[in-house]
Length: 185
Image (cartoon, rainbow, N blue to C red; front, side, top):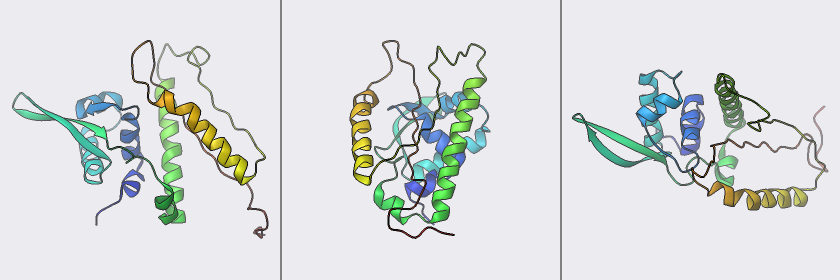
């Protein structure tokens, strides 16, 4: 059975691999082994193949290295994104798995950061917060548009000029039913 890119990403290791490519990065499996040292090589190769088969990764280039072919991969444009139609098609269990995979990825990223001896959460501007906002649906849509506007030029920046790769993750969800809907007892 062929899986959609959304289904392919509903796996913790595959999501971590896809996240490694964020920021227009092109990586080999050797690069990925360096970035994800806790993932056994056989698992890494198998999951990269699943991401290629699922249309999430594509081969950017190939080189001969000591008689073997070394492939450099990159994210297919938009492949690691779940659009509105794909999100609507997901079951409740798909959403639970997807969110759990996302949270597990965040925990793994934090663990990798905390393993560095020279870390300094203040210097490195590490933060995690949760705020409760009271917004109408229109105000929420306006906020999302404003955030996209602020983030778009920064997402387009590449490495260099003293830049460090940083992960910026968001979760936006209502905590109560829409106005006029009956609340579950």
